[in-house]
Each structure stands twice: as C-alpha cells, then as structure tokens.
Amino acid sequence: MQLLVIRHAIAEDRDEFAETGRDDSERPLTRVGRRRMRRNARGLRRVAPVIDRIASSPYVRALETAEIVADTLGVKQEVEIVEALTPENPSEALLPWLATLPPESTVAIVGHEPHLGRLVTWLMTEGGESHVVFKKGGACLLDLGVRPSGGGALLHWLLTPGQLRAIAD
Image 1 (tube, rainbow, N blue to C red):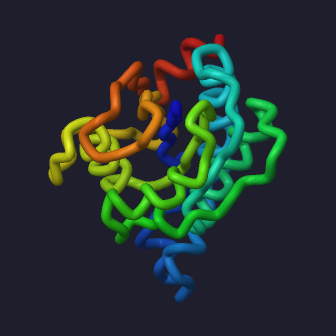
Image 2: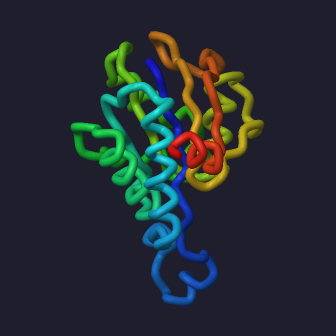
C-alpha cells in the first residue's frame, strides 16, 4: 500500500477566527490557500501515483484541501472523513482504517501538523516524536508494505509546497 500524506493548505488566521466564536474545526482555507493548493495539486499530479481513495480530517480546512486534491488528481470516490486524522488522535489510531483497504491500493490522507509529522515518523520508525515537518500544502509518499504498521514504512519522497508548485509549472 502506498500512502500520500498531505498537510492542509493555508487557512484563516487562528486568532482572528477565534474572535468569531466558532470552533477552530470550522476554520476554512483562505483564497490564497485554495489557489496555492490547486498549484500544489498539479505538482502532485506529476509525481504521485494514481490515487484510489482519499480521506480527510473532518476539519473544514483539511476537507477543503482534500476536495481540491481529489478534483485535480481525478479521484473517482468522494472524500472520506476519517476521525483518526484529527490532531488529537495518536498515530496508531489510523491503522484500523488502513487495514480495511486493499494492500495494493494507493490512498491519500489530508490532516494537520504536528499530527502528520508524528504519524509519518511513527509509520517509519515506531518512534513517538516527530522528525518530519510538513509545511501547509506539503506532501510525502510512503510505501506501507502489505500490512501497515508502526516502523515498517519506507519514505519515497517529501516535498514542500514550493517544490510542488515548481514541479507543476
């Protein structure tokens, strides 16, 4: 199984959004965030394998990012909401969802930092601290093998948003 891990794009300012009284999970992408993510996704289209399924944290900014990626990459299925991708979940919480997928599939997930950095580190090393940093709109591709588990993943590449946009051009 291959796993494309993507951090959500640029969202509205946390402090300014908090003044609206709405929950942070409702914070959307900015216009610039959407525009840059479309370019990032065009870069992903050039380097990522064909995506069979895409999942997202239920947070608005992640879901909006996942929809941009799905549209640009031509993912046929709708974006699936996976609670294990919310920032407060432990890395291993994603394993039950991954276990439901065919081992030959390529899936994309969209989430948040520092959760994604910890998840990718855990998948590669089974370590608890994050040693991978995702900028907003950045992505990496992992090979999880036939049976996803902590410590068994192989990193194929890790690209910043700027690198993805450069690839897109």
